[in-house]
Length: 239
Image 1 (cartoon, rainbow, N blue to C red):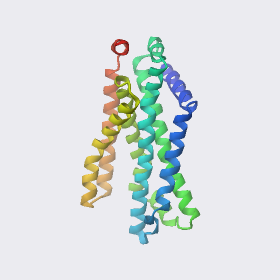
Image 2 (image 1 turned 45 degrees about the vertical axis):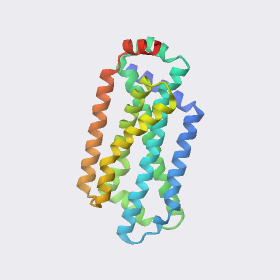
Image 3 (image 1 turned 135 degrees about the horizontal axis):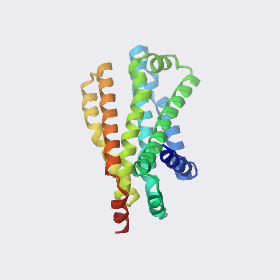
Image 4 (image 1 turned 90 degrees about the horizontal axis):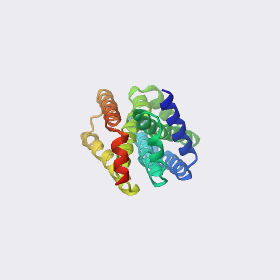
């Protein structure tokens, strides 16, 4: 735990001290927070209209987290690779699991915070416009709304952070690492997009989808920790 705490402190400090990370975070939160409020879908009336409005808005919140994690998680590794500090980190006595898990946790936490802040900005903005009662009700009262607000962004952030971290350890180019990470998100989205076309979303299906996504994310973390071996990585970086 001490090793993990050390890595978490280091990665958090690097995120807070990197202006590009902060700009990406800020732009994603503001843009994804305000876009649904400015769209015509906020004018939908009735309970069904409020539910549809909330669902579309939550898609923006999820995408905010996707953008932030897909940028941050690989860059936390690539920044060290370009600065030649990754080799020094690997030369420390920190455990392999702590190094990999620390980077994943920070990347996922940043994306999760981005999604939650996006939801908060959406709620504040729509209430300032004078029509937030229905939104607030569905956000707080509907079980599937709570799942999409709190559980889905966490599972998605862990999934993307794990993929992004592992990809950046193997791919040295920033654009390539970002594209591969986003491709993993696109592949994950295929069954969800197919289900959207059927227009048969239910609480049971959403709950199962979140559970499956969370399970997949945890499996990827376990696999990533097991495959992360500094001996092999040091040889790879020297090639």
